[in-house]
Image (cartoon, rainbow, N blue to C red; front, side):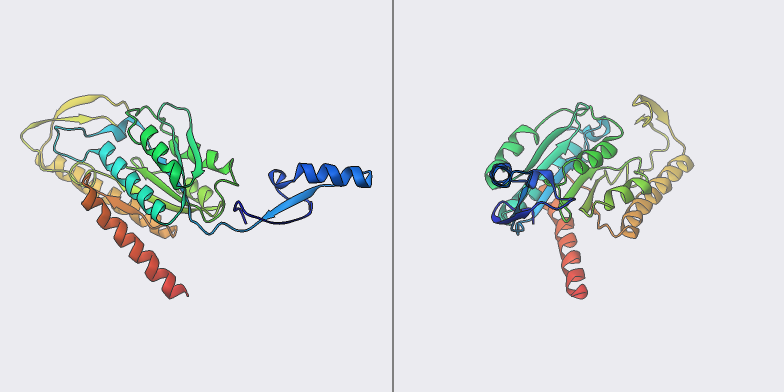
Length: 278
């Protein structure tokens, strides 16, 4: 397994991880035999859960800050991460973290409970939201470069509004690594999951392509079209996840107690599925 406790050693076999080679023992054996010999350390599997948290920090995820009365995405993301950290700590798990807030990877390999406070202080309260649009592609590629830290079965929590939704091909590429992917969809229930009747008044809408905010006066029919489009987009997103055997979590509030509810539903769903599968 990929744990820290040594189970024993054996001769190197083609395909073994180079990081598993015991170089000191290999050197001694090579000297004794007069030829190159390599010894590989075998370890016991780690029973504690291994978790990676990936936060989408594009500019779109910085909306909507107080005093606006809608979903505060940064706060919702913080509370969600705190919930995952608390659960991991209770289970004795190892937690890693990744974001691209400024275009560069802010990567923390999975650490135990004593290191969780460092992650919470350093990244959770960061105000950087200048991440690239291809944050998910970069994140998947980055995790693939660390197979020992992100081994098959690792829980990978992905926090984003997923607007626009990533391609199916991208999800299939991630699934090939056999991680336990958990999309956490953070969307405002009024403006992203639906759309209010704002006919007759001027509203400021942000162009998702350019980021510009423009004053717009919509007719009732135009607002209705936007509502149906947003509802259809969310439905397609969630059903697309389920078609890939991924269990999404929908976060529609920045209040702690309201974020907990969908996580409990997700936990119960997985527990029920495991019982049926057994």
